[in-house]
Length: 538
Image (cartoon, rainbow, N blue to C red; front, side, top):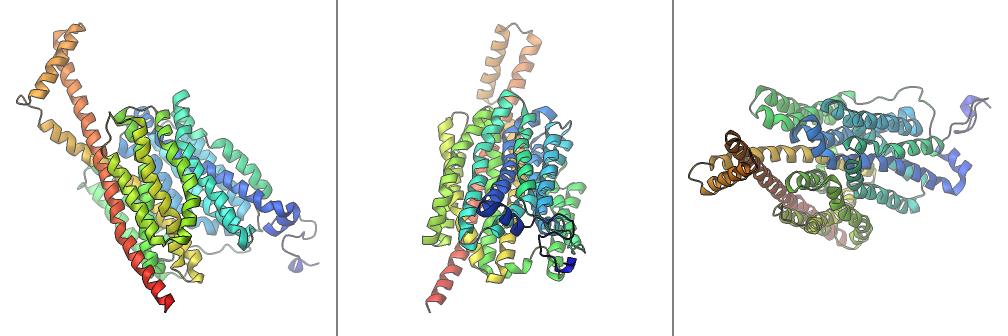
C-alpha cells in the first residue's frame, strides 16, 4: 500500500500509527470518550485552581514585595489578559502540533510558570510567571472543550459538557480555601504549587488518551498582525489603567500608553474587518441580539472575576480575616454554584433567557448593595450570605447567556459565535480586575485627603483620641518625646484604614451599578427575542 492510500491512523511501512481519535476509540472501546474527558478535565481543573487560589495571597504578596494594589492585581489581571490572547491562537497551534502535543506542551509551560511564581524573587518575575500560566491556559482550555465535543456523539455531548462544567465550577469553589490553607500552614509561595500535581497527572493521561495528528506539510497561515495589534491594545490599556493613579493620569507615560492601547484596539477591529484570515469574526456583532448578549458576557466576566479578586482582599485588609478564613468565606458560594448551574440550565429551557439574565443581574447587584454596608463589625456568616446572593445571580446568568448568544446566530455562525462570546467574557474578566483596583486606588486617595482635611484643633473627637493615646503611651513608660509622635502615627493609621474601608464600599457600589447598567443590553435582548417569537408565530 502506498503512503497516499494508507488509511488515516494506520501504519505507513514500518512507522507507528498516528493515534487519531478514531484510532484511540478502536483501541480503548466505548470507554475512550470518558478517558479523554477525564484527561482534559484534570488539566483544566489545575488551571482554574491556579486562577482562583492566588486571590487570597494578594495581601501577603503585597507585604513580601512592598507593593500596592495597583501592582499586586497583575497576578490576576495578567493571567486573564494573556489567557484571552491564548484563546485566539489556540486553533492555529492545535492545527500545527495536534491535540496531544498542544495539550501536554501547554501543561509543561503552565507548570514552569507555577514553579517560577512560587520561587519568584521579585514582583516582576511573579507577573511574568502569571502571564506564562495564563497564555498556556488560554491555549489548553478551548482545546479540551473541542476535543470532548469531537469524541462524543451528538446525543451525548450535553452530558459530557455537564460533567466537564461541574469540574470547572468545583475548582473555584475549593481554590480560595486551598490557597488559604497553604498560606496559613506554610507560606504564600506554596499557593503556586497547588496545581502542579494535577498538571503532572493530566500530562500523563494526555500522553495516553489525547488524540494527535501528523504534522502538516505546510504551516497554515495565521493572522499575526491582528494578534500583535490585540496584544498591544491590551498591554497599552491595561498598564495605563493600572499605573494611572501612581504615575498621574495626565502624565506623558500614562497618556501615551492609553493612546497606543486605544489606537491599537481600533486598528485591530478594522484589520479583522479587512483581512480574509480574521481570527476574530467582528462582523458577527452586526447581529443585534448577539451584540446584546456579548455585552452582557463582558459585564458578566468583569463582575465575576473582579469580585472574586476584590472580596478576599477586602476581608483580609479591611476586616482582618486570615487567608484561610477568607477562602472559607468564598467556599459556600462556590459549592452552591455547582448545584445551581444544572438547575439553571433546565430553567433556561422553560423560561425566556432574557428573564433569567435580568433576574440574575438584579440578584448580583443586590448582593453588592449588601456588601457596601460591610465593615469590621460584620460577622463571617453575614459576609457568606452576601457573597452567596451575588453568586446566585451569576449562576442564573451563565447558562441563559450561553444559550441566547448562540441561538441568535445562523447555524454556520455558531462556532465563531461561541469563540467570540468566550473571548468577550475573558476580556471582561481581565478589565474587571484592572478597573476595580484602579477605582479603589482613586477612591482611597480621595477619602484619605478628605479625612485628613478634617483633622484640626477644632475637631474635638480627634483631640480626644490623641490625648487618650498619649496617656496610654505614658502609662506604658514611653519617653515624653515619643508619646505625641506615636499618637499622631496611630491617628494616621486609623485614617488610612477608614479611607480604605470607604473605598471598598465605593467599589462594591460601582460593581452593583455596573450590574444594573447591564440591564440595558438585557432589555434589548428581551425585546429582540420577543420579536423573534412573534415572527415565528406568524
